[in-house]
Length: 450
Image (cartoon, rainbow, N blue to C red; front, side, top):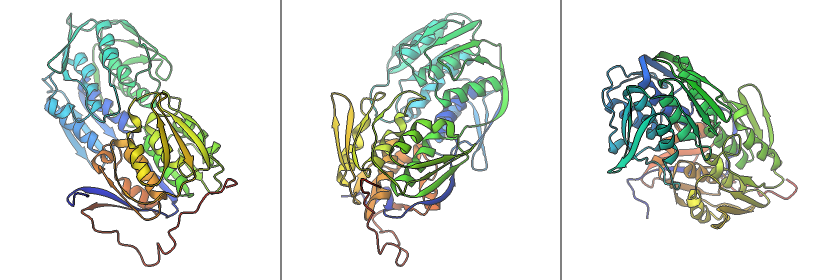
């Protein structure tokens, strides 16, 4: 039974999404950039910061370390870390947010010492810190774990440049290594680094503050240490995962949706797969449009580091593939516990089977999904259930809205702008239906010929 006090997301499926909507700033860029503000001598002003709970947690963490945070309007944040005095991050905040581990590199650069609890956040599988530690050791630190904390201490007055060969591409380790190295003495060479747009955005931000970073966007980054960084005004890049979620919301309802203020080049892996399924995709410099009235089949997916198919788009893609003809195979190569939401999709009538040996999901469609009470186990799984709910007959109630709010700013409002029937709800009050709107709520079945 649903808890009547639970805040949920309620979706009345069957409405074809149409129109244009603007995406917001990237969560995974904003969080490390906020942490990087600890390195500045001066005030940092950030524009297009999403108003999501993860940003709120990072703000509280920076304040706990001594920074002053001020919000101006909806999406501008000013950070003054000149009085920051603590290098020990509180467990109560770090446990809520995996990205809070980004402060380790920033604290090392600022104080030469960092004491940060091991990361929390969504339970998606193993989150090893060994590559972070490898980078800190290469930069001249003593590193050890004690009482649930990672403790790193520079051996000298400043960190020193070094060379790191990561055993695999890691967004978190790449970010932390950059944050620690920008104020280190000498040159740092980072090999086999992550090439994600959010990593590039962090490097661009650091360079705007006076850092000397080259090679970001490739697999090798070279950093010339500088003595100090200054304040700056900077705009966060568009959130490619939010953009992709909105595009899939349009596709799953066989709609016609344009997402603006985005970076089409960041979504190439997704849009390529949508075209394989029969979706018409058009784009300009800062917009992408999908028309999905000619779906012909499914497709196979292998998640991979950028520029491959993003693991954070995997649950939303599975929700869409449930409505596509044929059999699709989605293999997850990044996180070993990302398919925890599949049982919830099954409650909605989806035919998805997970093979644990290959960490893959076999999706058979097209299935007529039906509304059901379901629970979001993490941010992107919640978004995947939203995508499925938009296609389902009847009402879907998603428990775990607090997860969705960690990565999406007012998702229900974005979908409502496109004609979706989505609202927040506390308790079990049914959606108010405009007269006649759902008289024909049957979701159109998709034939093999589209």
